[in-house]
Length: 401
Image 1 (cartoon, helix red, strand yellow):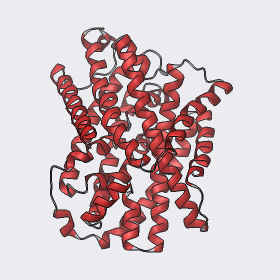
Image 2 (image 1 turned 90 degrees about the horizontal axis):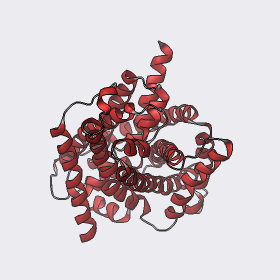
Image 3 (image 1 turned 135 degrees about the vertical axis):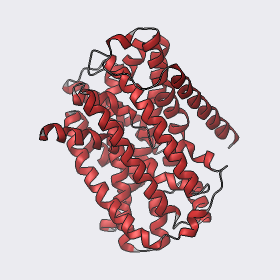
């Protein structure tokens, strides 16, 4: 029983760790001009939507006889060749965009981290390299080692987040939370959407839990609800401290909420804690995304996980994002925005609904399935319509920017 409970906690932390990451740091700045209450409403609606699409993906994943299949195989077996191509393009775009953001963010976090501890300033391009080597080691040794490493990182994230919150609450000005301006909320949709993009870990969870439906459902629902509460608390303290003009400057320059708050309060202890918090927040999400990208590439290219195959997977996982991450200044924010705008809504919103539609109503997979997500054709149509609306909205925003 204790082993079963421990494994459930590991799954919950993998989902939460994949969810909480770099997008959380950008969230207060991306929705800040709209205000606290519009931002909380947007977060809650995104949580509802993506929890449902995660259950859709779980339904599809459990149709597959092989525990280790990834999204390409799932899309091919349900939708066909067109689904396979769609999954390839959307998944590679999303995961490489996220990995680029996390490498860029982890590089800055590592530079700030070392500077806070030693006073030494490293070149920005050097920051991500130690992280990539450490992650490569854990990816090489598989999901179990990633799980154990992730638990340690989540403890660090939890401790630093707690210190940040208790340190910041006394400085919150409630009148700043009363600001409401709905139109700017549209600008923050892409970042908030990215903040709930944990679905990529579901195929790895199925392998981890060996298809145990009870464990997987609880890991998904609990593991995603906890970050929602964390986001709301984080938005509360940030928007209660940062003035509107600083939010606008931070958005234009691509700065994250934690460091802006630390700079405003100008406390050396808080700046050190903020550096640790940013570091852990990015690294926990980076770990889950890189694991999923590695599994995806293994499935898509049919790379066997021999010693040489694992090394190749590490190279394919980290090299392209690293090259993109050193290409410009606002890479962190820009990569997150594009990931949410065009990757998350298509891959984690539209595709799960399409796979369930084809699998249930055209391929007959439902008859042999062990789980059916709530809702019928009406719910699937609504999910696809929302994904299409968000995609068009973001396309208009990007073209007109």
